Length: 513
Image 1 (spheres, rainbow, N blue to C red):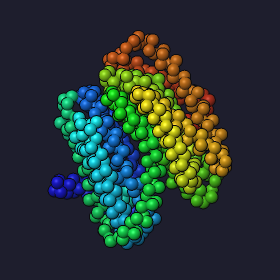
Image 2 (image 1 turned 180 degrees about the vertical axis):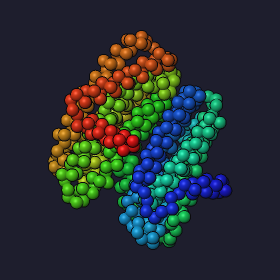
Image 3 (image 1 turned 60 degrees about the horizontal axis):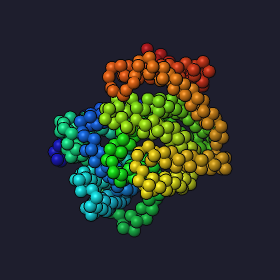
Image 4 (image 1 turned 90 degrees about the horizontal axis):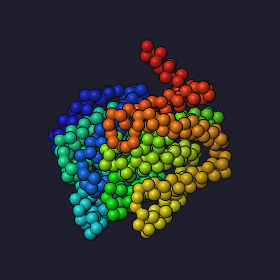
């Protein structure tokens, strides 16, 4: 195993830039390409898996993966986000870097072993999942090796080229393995092994790479305990989403139909893959926003925030409403006709994305950036508590259909948004008028997609959800026409964000020529 890892590392080393000063443009491009790889490969593998694996086996996998996804963040213990900040603060002092790295690594070893042991014991004594236990153990192994995942150090050192090539190698290996070993409806165990093995290999490569630049030092037990307190806060803040979509999935897995969890998982994959790309339009602005606040340049902060929010809503609102309209067709094209029942779930989840987009701006770019993370964490837990309550009501009434659980998440996240609006107004953090005016404008324009959809559905005489050329042409025609309509309306109305984006594109084209 070590020999294979050395070979892979030697391959990666050929592409490593030997320079003390990192090229920002190269890093930005590498980071973008990593995100692209993380989107493209699931778009290849997931449609293949939904068609090859039986519905029941795919449901078993998603059930086991849901619970493994719960324990993995607990094993990580919030170290990723905390580590980036902590190492960045001492980046110029080698001894301090070694100290911080060692402290966080030792804590990670302890939490990984502890949480995985608890998880395995629960699985061992749980008699209700006899048919699933092997999947739980295989997928849970990722939590055990979580301490090797040192990607936060690579990000701190700006090793984005390494991350890019490593991600490419891992993704290709995963792709080849899936197409080689997952060929029948019953190949669910080989698939689980592939997912865990490639994930652990990813962890190991990150560790071996960064270990070249740091050394372990002795840390006292008292110091480790003391350091755990801020990590616990970071764990809660960074994984607040566990109180929403992951919690929904955990409740759904307790239902009588193993297909329900697949409907939810497929829907989440379709919508959030796209949403995560679009959210990159605002995530890159967070350091700059923090810089303006640190300089007390509130006017620049306000202008950048409003501009970023407008660009984000310009992209996410039409995308979400488009998926809402084409939910059934998007689902069957992505996962085949046997998952048609997930179509309504896709449409509802797309609507939830709009609420998520609002909260992302209010929470991350206003409240968090103004150093109110404790209050934000409290809001998340109020929303999460609401979601637990609503989910429990559904559970005790034997309701497990995924659309109801997405609805509870929408209600819970709306509660969070209302709390955030109240807090922002009370403390005069920002005038929200421009943000919500922008949101409303793009929503109203995007509602025009509905008559366009019905027009093309009538013209193409689509009366079923069978995936064929006629249906695909209808979907493509609808998407293209909606896109042209959306941009044309914004052009006619002289929308500032549209013209800003257009000028940016035209400028880049001229430069390339």
